[in-house]
Length: 267
Image (cartoon, rainbow, N blue to C red; front, side, top):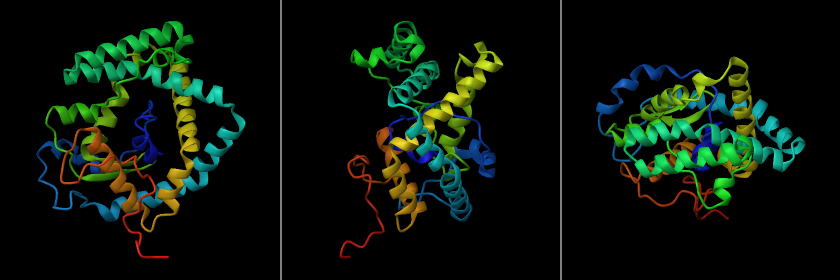
């Protein structure tokens, strides 16, 4: 699910994603760059009724399939194997990040991500081991949504996407482009591509299991899980992009259990 993907520094971290159906608002994505300014609250959510319905669908999917699958994966698969799967998926996603770095004009980040890919692919058993990180070279995470931000595209309206979770019009378009942007994709056979997709799904289950306490607190313990997920996503995303809109930009990771609807005087 997409709730963690953003909260875990693309870790929600953002992993090669399986293609899912995008909600009908996708038709409006090309207008995101010239969308009107958001209201004073900093949240532009004219599709709230539809988004809430999608949110309930996503919660049902999580409750019935994703959470049990993540718990089973976390219990059955040893930690070193889970870590290797996550490392491999993150490594094979690096060429996509390099393309975005170049499109954003970030030459240094493109060099770091290229070097990480070469080192891990060569000395890390195809990426199963993150030897570059062990040597102090961290990934410079990015995506096409950030590329659009650098190009001047506005955030657009808030969306909740089926099976993916919180997004905006700009980031939803970015997800679609990112899915096809990895230059490695064309070099894989059909069987290899299916394997990468399967490993990407396994990596997502690993993230869901690792951050289950935080995710469960948002989805099942908040007074309004939709509003909580929306607020955390927008805070986190805008913080990542250096501040955009009218929120006060504090680090959203400081207190992941914060509930804006909680009564501070309740015993």
